[in-house]
Length: 192
Image: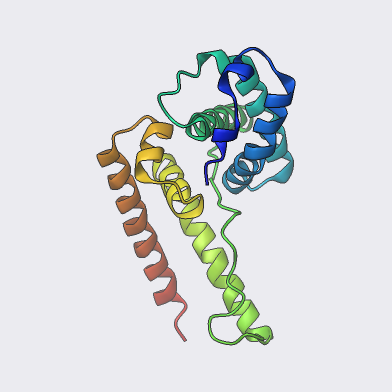
């Protein structure tokens, strides 16, 4: 998964544009998908992705190699995301709801060719899942997204969010419990 062994960090630190292009080729999609999932807005995700790589280019000399390069880039992306949300919240003066656009709605639970009713039911389930994830507290949302959607290990999440592994485990556990409660309530309300 981590192809940063192809990246020459020393050349990056010297400002080598070819090496930076390679870095972008290897990591831009990862960053964009994470930000698009968190922001649920392609334009904002594109803008923040560019901002992330500008920051990477300008601060690569600060990379100490204590973690994987991809983990360091994820941390920058999460920090840019948090900064963006704070700025947007100040402008709008009301709470910002997080969303998770990278979760794919199931095409069908049983049938490979769903009818209109099945498609509508699946969309409703997808929307219920989105609503439940949107209501998670920020740290739970980030930990859950990085773990379940991005497929990162708890150790990587710990490094990215600057938390202990125990704290990450707790956040993921609480996110799952919160989602179970919210979705249980949804299904109890919508039983036929």
